[in-house]
Image (cartoon, rainbow, N blue to C red):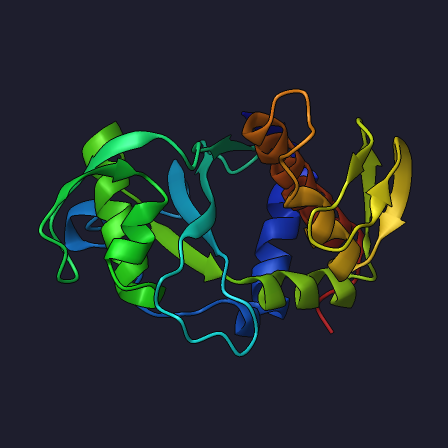
Length: 223
């Protein structure tokens, strides 16, 4: 879990206002997972779903590559990021033609049919698991994240362990460095050859989101 400072909360607002075209603004929450009313005074809970869909890929057999819950306490002065392990074994309720059953939590998105229905089944699964109901959700694919990072002018990431990308062969060496969208996404997708495997990847994904929000808070995005 990562605590984001107030500047990151401001960045979240500005980022949403400036780059809302990269986020699918449709019904992404199942009725059982959605709060009936939302107060902007908080507390607020949001579901962020990163899909593994690549540009031009229409294959419905896609799983959610990252699942994060954003909790904003009352007052909106800080926010917490909670990563949900993608391999967590859960009971997925019926939905999207799926009859229900046990599987990894990231399979809920696929069983629901991907896209909006997949996000709805995933949200229903999370509510059943945690009891949380959400104020909103966002579904972002690789292209969307890459576009946002590049529009921000890149982000500063600190590599803690040397790792070679299984996708591009790039070697990321320890130290803080500026990354563009392609580099940052390549880095945070890695989980092999890391000391804690997928837990390290979750940490890097949280680090990226924090870097994006802080960069958004530092940049004039209101033009």
